[in-house]
Length: 210
Image (cartoon, rainbow, N blue to C red; front, top):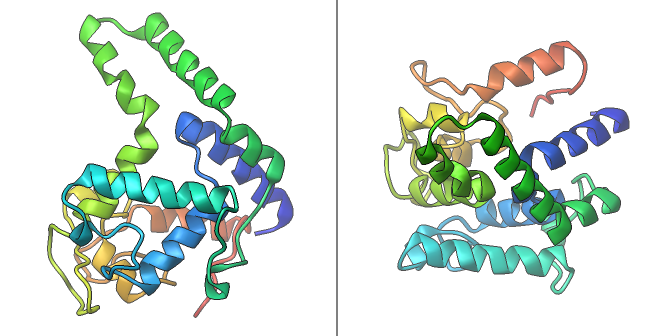
């Protein structure tokens, strides 16, 4: 996409992820490592090398922070071709931003929650990013069915996939990691792909043929 739209969506990312903001550079490095070393000891978040989902996510968080703060450098193959905006990254990874987002969520509940039990949903808003990552990384490599032999444990998980906008078509995604459409069978549907097609039609993004 052009620089204007890259910056536009960078800001959308900051606002929509809120307290769960993930630095695109650090995330891209971990994601590339995950594909290159899927379900091996070098995979940053394979559920098959941890006792439980909490251990996996803590290890993933620690590695993410090391790349975020440039404490370690990734292999050359995992570097480059990702957007960077140091100012927004600094804001999104600050405790001031996380606390401000948390206060906004609490204020929203005070204004609109009709019943006391609704406040029990607040932790989900505080930790939406880590929860999403835990579901995709743990369930996507343990439960479901496989269309392809990728020499790993990646799975597809219907119907839950629809709730995560196609993210749980992990087996398909590992088979064709450069495809914008995570569905490969006629009866599968990736909800994100039509959105990308519309953005492509509007010339906001360009889907490359590979």
